[in-house]
Amino acid sequence: DAKTTQPPSMDCAEGRAANLPCNHSTISGNEYVYWYRQIHSQGPQYIIHGLKNNETNEMASLIITEDRKSSTLILPHATLRDTAVYYCIVMILAGNQFYFGTGTSLTVIP
Amino acid sequence: GAVVSQHPSRVICKSGTSVKIECRSLDFQATTMFWYRQFPKQSLMLMATSNEGSKATYEQGVEKDKFLINHASLTLSTLTVTSAHPEDSSFYICSAREQGYQPQHFGDGTRLSIL
Image (cartoon, rainbow over all chains, first blue to last red; front, side, top):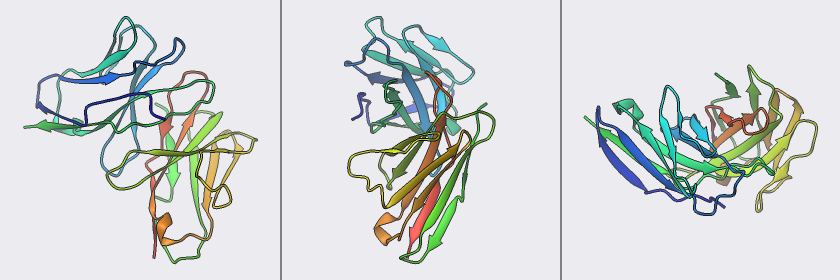
């Protein structure tokens, strides 16, 4: 039931920006995009969410295309502790549910 | 930030035992709580959604008599795995959401091992 597609894996050099893409071509007008990450054997950690405007917080930036069919999560200066599986999720408000896709396994390389 | 506490973090028990897992929102009132399970090297699979004071809504293929969910207050939901068997061994994770488009916040999960 996941409405998003992500590349299965990516590498990023430590200190460089990590850009994680997500396609959500069937997104509806009132559906938000959420990003989470999961470090091995822990619960997912909330990163950021947005509707149509770009968003930034202390962890990351979220860039949403004008047609809202895709988005990119940017970690500006990746560290080894950013190695995790990153999930992009579109929530259907009516049912409240999050359906997780397969995510992107990001490996930050020293 | 919003904190969700989940206990216990690990359970090992014999086949046939019932196991209860608690999920608490510590600093916000959760109108909706969710339960997921995750097998090794797989993504999270939504099991059920519960609203405070209402019966849980189970996803297709999840046995409601096997996985009992109670959401008696705005800060507490419990999942009871009844008569657990080895195939129920998994990583169970809860999450809680305040309202509207607020993000879900997740507990640290419970690793359940049935011998």
